[in-house]
Image (cartoon, rainbow, N blue to C red; front, side, top):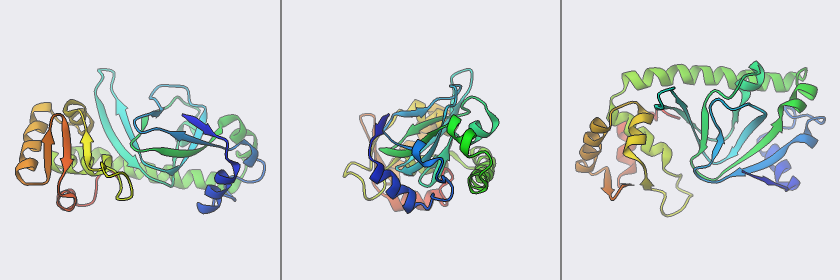
Length: 231
């Protein structure tokens, strides 16, 4: 994580996403701009929650882990979204791990300033309410998706979510993923996922080479995934 000392850029993002009424005048001096590299953890499950983050650039992956070490993807997030809202409201430790899928920029503010200047500010509270209720709906859907959707649909959605947008690097479709980790994250066995990857290769949608997966037919994956279940 890097703190970016660029007030002009910070205020440009605030204007772009119309956050002026949400982070009103008393809160503005306490906002900071942060960047995270691809693959960097933004927060980890079980850690003490201290900051509220607003995602303004890039994509993050949110997943949960069991005491046995198994993990499961809950969702991928793009701007505009908030990290740490439930933890702030309830005063609890971080619920899920959040990892940067691409380079990520966030606006961050420490809880102590929110408690001092935001606890009775109606636009900020309404903003949190909107975000939290949306997350509740998405989480309810995501738990059903991992039961109802076949593995090939979950894998197609996963590959679409971890690959970059068209504006990113030329290597956006060359994915270095651990099959074991991917199996855990989408809730299936290593052996079953291997079979599905083989089938998608035979269908011409992807290509596997030395631990990497190359997305050959993005539109084909989109057709298979339908509405991306992780976003």
